[in-house]
Each structure stands twice: as structure tokens, then as C-alpha cells.
Image (cartoon, rainbow, N blue to C red; front, side, top):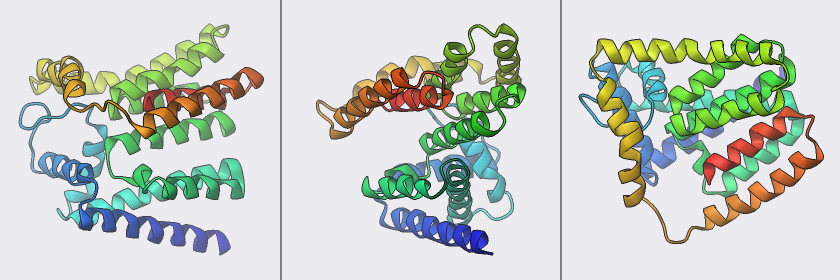
Length: 259
């Protein structure tokens, strides 16, 4: 009963945050991502009917609820459920220490809770850490999750495959199983692009277009960049001290994609 009450409280807390920021329009990205999901629910094709600079798993996933009721409230509920799942996974791994992660997310203007594909990449990162901790022998499943991370944000997902290569490079069979798991969702996505005649627009926006996107959305100085570099150095030091824990490799990759 205590566990159920804990997760109900976390869900309500997350829902209030998601609804407040959408209402105040502090982070416009959440509204944009809702519109992506709305467009998909209406039958529009990513990269053809509307522009995106990332792989589309997040808007596709979030569009499922909109098929029943196309309202931002549903979108906020779905995001709150995902946030609650992330907390549950962290609690299963770290126990009460997971509240520290919740506190840190609150300190940085709740940015980590924002309803975007960036959060979905974080969702898969946490799930990977959980699987490595509890089910490290489920290589096909772990590979599948990495594939989902790639389909959520390509620049992040590719980084999350590196821990497998760096940690298990001596176990070729294990790496091969995870590669197969990665290919499964990616091949399905490739077939979708081919059937929708959206393969070239996808590469144009999500790879070639990233150079133009970054040139118009960068900063000369950012506190978050400096803070991320400091975190990267700290995590790299921890990794050097604890090389036999693959979770440290994932955390390092997680910080590196922030940079």
C-alpha cells in the first residue's frame, strides 16, 4: 500500500509540473511535441507533412492516446506516466536515493521533466541502466531498447550503444545479440520510411539539416555547457575507478550527449 501511495504521489506531482509548464508556455518544445503527435494521430507523415530534426518514436508513442481523445490533457497524462515509470526504475535500483535525482530535476527549473524527445532518450537511458542491473543477460531486449533510443533521438541512441562495445568487446556473441536487437526496431522504421517515400526527407532533416539547425540554435556561452563538462570530468573519474560497473559507462555517455 505504501508503494502504491508513493507512486500515486509521484504521478500527481509530475502531472502538476507538466500541466503548469504547458499552461505557462515556459518551454514551448512540449507544445511543439504535442503538435507532432497530433499530426501523426491525424494521419500526417513525419518529414513529409511536417518537419522534425529527430527520429520520431516519441511523437508516435504519444500519439497513441490521442487516437482516443485528441487533447493536450491526454498528452500530459502520458508524459506524467512516463516520468513516474522513470522514478520507479530509479527507485528499484537506488532505493531512497532516487529522491535525490528527483530533487536535482526540480532544481534545474524542472527542465528534465519537459515533454520532448530529449526526455524520451533519458527514459531509455534509465531503462537500460535498470536492465543492466537486473537483467544483464537479456541481450536481445537490451539491444531492442538501444534501438528504441536511436529512434527517439538518433544522436543520443548511437552514444548509448558504445557502453556495450566498450564493456563487452571481448564477448563477441553478446555484442552480436545486442546488435540484432538494435536492428529490429530500426529495420521496421526503415521499411516505414520506404513505404511512405520519406527516406530522403528523413536524412535531409535529421542528419544533413542538423548542421543548419545547430548553427542557428547555439550559444556563445551556456552555464549548462560548463556544468555538463564538469559533470563529464567527474563521471569519467568515477568510471576510471569503477571500470567493472557498466552503469558508469552509460552515465558517461548520458552526460556526453548533453554536451
